[in-house]
Image (cartoon, rainbow, N blue to C red):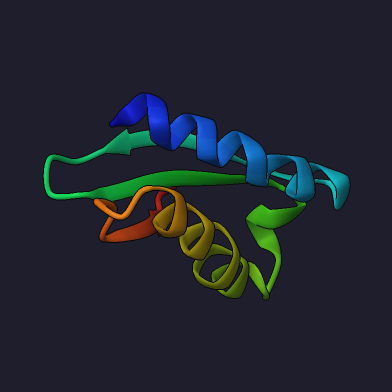
Length: 74
């Protein structure tokens, strides 16, 4: 499943990179939790949680229904 998640994240990253940000896949747990590290402009942005949940998480869950949530890690 990690490869599928990476492929989906790569599609989202293009949009993040266009705004000076990025997201790195850290881990995919056995229970469907995706852990990402926000980078660049996304790292300190006050809207990063909205980007994480409404952008990254929504897209990944749409592409891979087995994913339960996407969480940011340091």
